[in-house]
Image 1 (tube, helix red, strand yellow):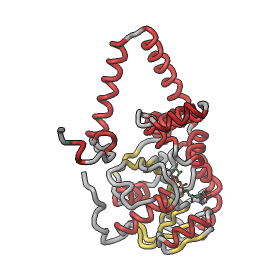
Image 2: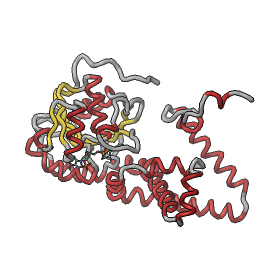
Image 3: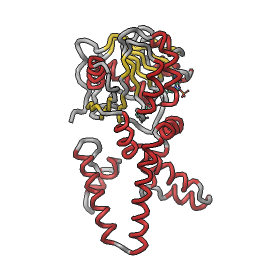
Image 4: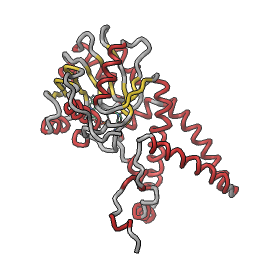
Length: 320
Ligand code: NAP
């Protein structure tokens, strides 16, 4: 597994790209694309004056505008990087400015609803190839991004069945240049897989942290004080952007409800094991789940260091 982005490409993959929404993901794309020369010109648009100000100061693009249409004009690749709920409005806004042959993509954590929101607005001759880089942090905004965010992470492309093969190949090459491993699958399959691996775990984290928040004051402060016992790791997920996650749940309703149904059944089974004192059942389940963690570490998707690699000081390693 490499730690660094590759050397800059001799020829950019796209001459001009537009990044609409320059938050954590959009700004990371801008940084990485610049670093590896995946695009010659980078045009940025964002509705937030503060984000535009920071993007300009950080020199994230060749132009920074309030108008998505202006940024998208003449672009060979347009990447929608705003929250999923903004996509229909954005597609409508950029449509008149899109050049023939342009690739329109996105980074949304949900794919079926995104295709439904964007596709109807695109003119003929423009290629829609949705994408989801499975990479991120709990932070938001242009300052939170970094060029290596996508390094060794997966980017899932969900092209419609009749998608232009050349457009899919160029987008694949773009994400590979940014450090990703690329996989292609259907939007519905993506939404079911991500419901289990990302959406429901976030919901569980929001729920447990919400439960703690609703405790009476004295108990709540004890929860924060002794948070290292697992609660702290849930708070990282539960600190994720509220707008983004609201849109994820509203737009991946069916798959999330399906995954939650299975989760509730398994939770009931666990409750029963505890009530009946079924130690063997609990031990067997916890042994199976431990193996999953090992598999994720072996696949290079997580650090093998204990406690997520949090520093504990060299002295901790010694004896007396
Ligand atoms: P973010 O840091 O909050 O950035 C989003 C930016 O888009 C903000 O500056 C926001 O401005 C702006 N924006 C909102 N509506 C807009 C519009 N109509 N036109 C132009 N700009 C607009 O969000 P993010 O974490 O980068 O997430 C962006 C997308 O990436 C989401 O679709 C999400 O599903 C996907 N994604 C996120 C992660 C992750 O871990 N964060 C991972 C993979 C994919 P305001 O602040 O004023 O709203």
